[in-house]
Amino acid sequence: MQTHRKKRIEIIVESAIEHRLVAAIEAEGASGYTTHPVIGGKGHHGAWQEIGITPGSGKLAIVVIASPELAERLVPKLYAAMADYSGVILMSDVEVIRSAHFS
Image (cartoon, rainbow, N blue to C red; front, side, top):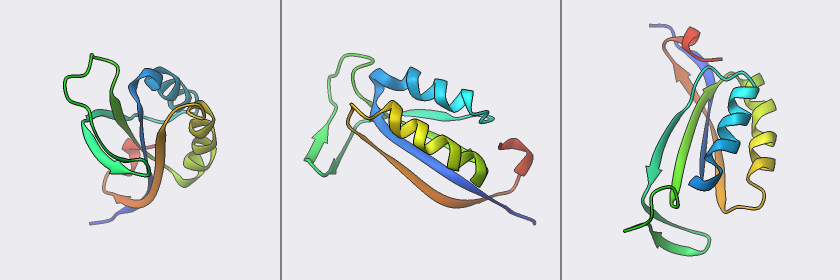
């Protein structure tokens, strides 16, 4: 089975700016993205947990699979969009089976 190299971009950020990040993702021409809630973790500022939060006020993860060229254009825009908020951007190499599904 043939695989194709792509980049996985994962953003973990406050859900209040989801619309900004999605707008940047769509503006750069990504073929899609996935979002899911993030309920806790431990990082630079210690452990945290989002229990009993008001809807829309927690954290979320957004995952984009993209070509290396698209990722190179997109990541600086994502970083700028979240500059005033807590969060991280992770990028890793992945291999996909259905290359045509990803920009």
